[in-house]
Amino acid sequence: MSMTAPIQTDDVSADLAEVTRQVGQAKSSFYTAMRFLPKDRREAMFAIYAFCREVDDIADEPAPQDEKQRGLAAWRAEIEAIYAGRPATLPVGRTLVGPIRRFDLQKRDFHAVIDGMAMDAERDIVAPDAAELDLYCDRVASAVGRLSVRVFGTWQPRADEVAEHLGRALQLTNILRDIDEDAERGRLYLPREALEHHGIATRVPTEVIAQPAIDAVCTELAAEAHRRFQLADAAMAQCAKGAMRPARMMSAVYAAILERLLRRGWAPPRATVKVPKLVKLWIALTRGLL
Image (cartoon, rainbow, N blue to C red; front, top):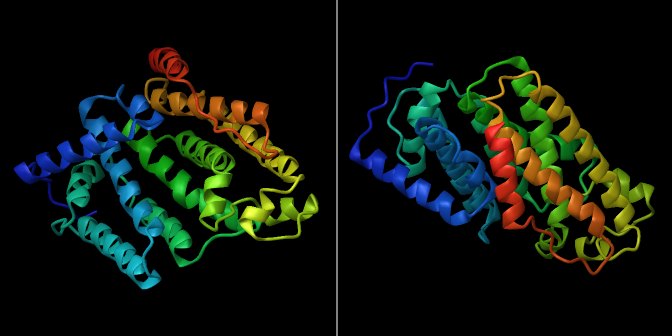
């Protein structure tokens, strides 16, 4: 990678301060987990988070498709410029320059995230087949994991396995948690094969999630998410403990969400599922200090 050493200008410092403010305002499980990292690693993760939010917002904004494509193309060009050693032009792009060099973050993973968002921008995803769903999860979640484990401090092959499995576990949990919200937006990420197996013929998202068999479909996908959590935990056990603390915390929080979803079920009407703040605090204290 032909990059010159990044210079921490006042502009970059201001960009980092704004990114940190935005991540803190989001009040997410991510913020809780990342607060345990040393300053340089924490700022790198906040920059990655801000990048993901920006490209996700482009894909989700109510704008013409050509406008979304231009926004994603601008980010592809920004990533190419950074790796070519040219100045970053976007505020969040400037915050990525230092972490990319310091932690040897891979260009292909940034492009994978953008490609994943492009899948949402090109059309509303409705009942993808299993292969397309797995590709989507790899791009929007596992690719972020591959960036993250390097920032956490490990380049071991097993660390990429953590990214592969935990990313999919987290994304499948998000899908299972957000089926109502996604359906209102005309999206349905539940796999086509599962819908067919359980006799759901309609492909209208709001109609699908109202079917009596939706509980069986979601329970089946939850089993796959649970399997991925187990595989991620097994891979984590083979990695440096300190480097895996944030991953263990994210895994524990999302596993708790999945467990609550399973207890609630998916038969309509569905109550919102959240992990109480005290539970999150307990997870942060126990998983963060182990």
